Image (cartoon, rainbow, N blue to C red):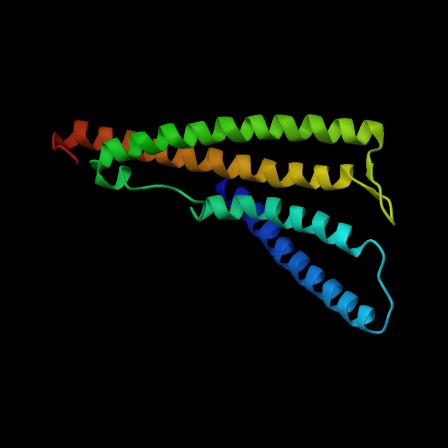
Length: 171
């Protein structure tokens, strides 16, 4: 299971990188064409959509490597078990929060699909495909967060089992 989640988050992060390259190439092309007086219609809207996808596709990989912003000032000073317990609580709250986000985005994506929502402008872009891809990124983020809290909880349980088996106190 861990390898599957890791490979999904790695694939999404890789795709995210390629999407960034695509945005850069499109923006370079837009700048070059604008210098000769030709504008590429809808490129700014498309760039915003792709950037949103880039962010959501990178969430799971960022969670895997613990690269999200966190404040460890207090937890680093705690004893080992207390730190693990605090991490389990914090990670569980993160999973609940991601669950709320997943629910909100999925209901919003469904509404967007049902109403055939689109962005008005020079070109009309449907919004639901972007929201569906946001769901993919959030789902991978949820799986990675669940994996992380499970791993931390197992480490905490093992520390208690080691103490029970050896009689030594682990700090």
